[in-house]
Image 1 (tube, rainbow, N blue to C red):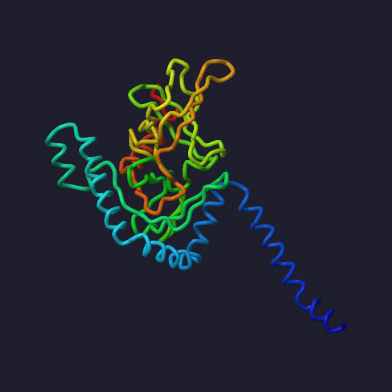
Image 2 (cartoon, rainbow, N blue to C red):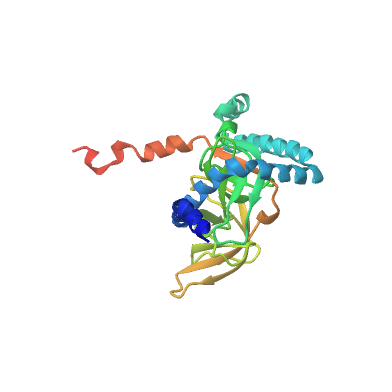
Length: 284
């Protein structure tokens, strides 16, 4: 018994330190979804090998090599299609096709290492990082071009994205073939349905109508499919609709995605933050 007390006395400081560290890390991790994302992407460096092994087995049984080749081809074709979409003249189109750097959107394929859909703040870990050209705020799309989410942090080899199935997610959406826009978000209820809020009462959304991105977002190109209208109801003041949108992307079963970067975003943000836009710099 005496030796037991001596042993406890010799290690209690270490045990207390570890316990306090665990409590502190738990408190820090729960402070915000961005904190969770940063901790998760850092831990991905350590857990990446294990996840990579199981992902490799899964890709083997799903013909992952062929999927990656197809995903790369899809990325190339989507990028070329984006070039066609923004080209206004034949001369400008030729410039985009000859010089990839002149294209507005840059795309690449990535593999889903791990993901979740049964939480309120779901996240997706991808096997691409800064060394592959991934940057924060890249859009994440399904292989058929539907909205999935956007990248919030990355390391050299991995990146973490917030999908639309996250209660902190926000993006702008529009009812296709109309000018009625709203805010896309998730209420945490159904992994197949998102909400399009604050839609004008004059929109009169009907089941089956397509919902797409507006192009106002700092993440997504315009007209990216989000889903289709399932139902809609007016708010209590009868001034705006809240629309239930059945998502086009099946996030729970995704194994490959497309990452999209708007090359003009940094330049646009720089203009928005320009000193010349501040009130004290107005001409007298």
